[in-house]
Image: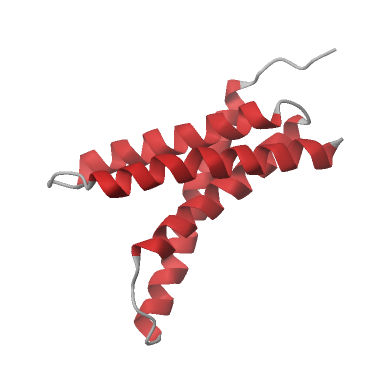
Length: 122
């Protein structure tokens, strides 16, 4: 029998994605500060994508089923939460290019991570 969709796992996944992305961003900041590596928005997008990918993988692995659904839910939820944080703390107009890139990266990374996590569990 199929397991029911658990919203608590999605919430846990979104929180985990935010924590992982934050930690990766801190590591990137330290790399920028202590080396001559040039700061790039691509690296920040990569940190967000990796955070969502890992969190989606973990949640789908825990669930054991519906990996694509859990991954997409974590990716979209991550995007919505980061968008809310952006509007709360940033006074200027949003960069639509950055928002478009993040709205594409988050669900795709979530879907990939969730699918892999569910397949590996089986």
